[in-house]
Length: 74
Image (cartoon, rainbow, N blue to C red; front, side, top):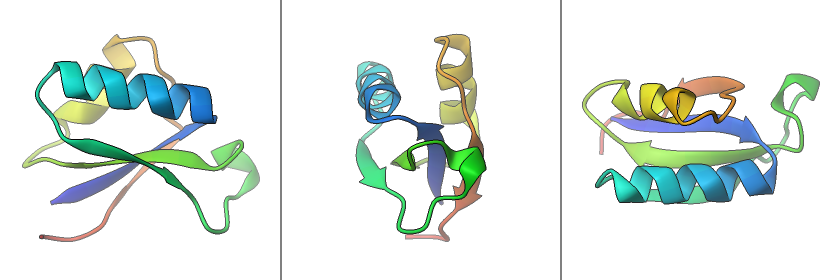
């Protein structure tokens, strides 16, 4: 399943991408099309995982997660 993890700023998205990469996850930085106020500047990281482990990894690394969406199976 793909997760879209909203992190707000481009800086946090780049940091999240680096943290996930160091843990063996392939992820990509994405700009949200229509971010809400809660989404900050509207940046997110897309990552494939069988569970919510990437969210926990980011939280434990000090990156604020503003929201998580699932994008289905691929």
